Image (spheres, helix red, strand yellow):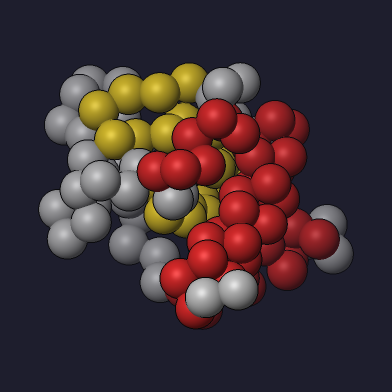
Length: 100
C-alpha cells in the first residue's frame, strides 16, 4: 500500500464515522467552504455541545448521500463558529459524556 492509498484509507474510515454522526444530528455538507481546500467539502454537524466540522475527501462523498448539501456563501450554509481542532474534540468528548 502506498502512502497516498494508506492516507485515503484513513480518510475513508473517518468518513464512515462522520457520516454516521451526521445521520443522527443536524448536518450539512458545504462545497467550497474552505478557500484553502476548495475541492474538499466541509461537513458541519450541530451537536448539543456545539458545532464540529471535518473536511471530507472528495472521493468519500458517496457516504454522505443522506446529508443536505449546499455551497459556501449560500444563505443556508452554516457559518463556521471558529472552533479549532482541539475545541472540536473537546465538544465531541463532552457530548460522548453527555455534558451540554
